[in-house]
Amino acid sequence: MSVLSRLPALGALRALPGRPLALTVAQRGMGGGGPRTMDITASRWQWHKFKDVLHFYFMLGAIPLTALAFAVNVFVGPAQLAPTPEDYTPKHWEYHRHPISRFLARYFYTSHQEDYEKYLHYIYEENEKKQMRLIEKRVKELMAEREDTRAHYYRPILTKYHKKVREEYDQMQHERGF
Amino acid sequence: MGENRPTNAFKEFSESVISMVDRPVTWFRENVVATNRPQYNWYHQQFRRVPTIDECYTDDVVCYTEANEQFKRDKQVDNEILNILRQRQEDCIIYEKNDHRTKCAHIMEEYNKAAENWFIKYGDLGIYGDVKTAYMKQKHRLIWERRHGKVGSGMKTDMD
Image 1 (cartoon, rainbow over the protein chains, first blue to last red):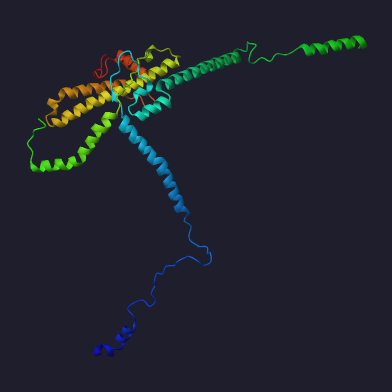
Image 2: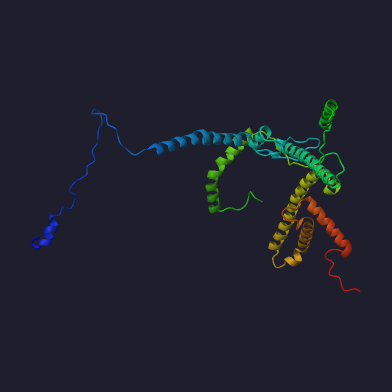
């Protein structure tokens, strides 16, 4: 021990404290009394908004839909496949298996047959228009080629105004003499 | 055959572990779910046969559209038929590997014939191939066969 205390470097080492000089002690800042202060903190708006949105989609979305899906699947259940009975055409929603698909097909979606018939009607109408346009085009071509019809390429010359002018001119000549 | 197989302790132990999950689930299913569900049916849609493309007038677009839809449905059905035959052939080959050329000969023959017929009807129509293209393909094939003999009957020899 006395050997150690004679070495000056070790003496300097011993002077260094092993612990930090200034201890940070957590102290409770108890409010109550004192002037009103404004706490300048970083914004927690994003965190609050996130919690808000999470609650919205979870409480109003996930939970009711999960409950609905559970109830439908447990208490109603999917349909059994059966061969089509003779003399019965199934309704268009009876071609679906799951009860929710059946519900949507029955009350919201248009059936395949309805779509098909609407499409066929549309095709028919457009084809009629197409045939009429083709005929018109052919007629115009022929009229332009033969130039023998008083139709598309004919501008009628109205002669009644020319006649009027001629009459007045004749009248004037008759009155004036030249 | 299934119920009274000889068991051992390990099998019984693993069965009991599995049944810890299986028995409550099965109970729930049989007692809560199956008793409360109504029994109702769903059906496969069956489409009526409509006139095919060779029975349509050239300016009858509605007939053409319906024949096209029927053609697409028939093509789907034929695809599935060919799939089943191909699966049969593959299963037979895997089962009888290295003997398959003798033991699976009839199944392979059946599939090859079906694939050839499928290709005659639906092959090489292109991405926009519809019922009209297929009809024209058949027409060209029949004309070709009328002029040159059956497809696949070999090359003509030089005859003077």
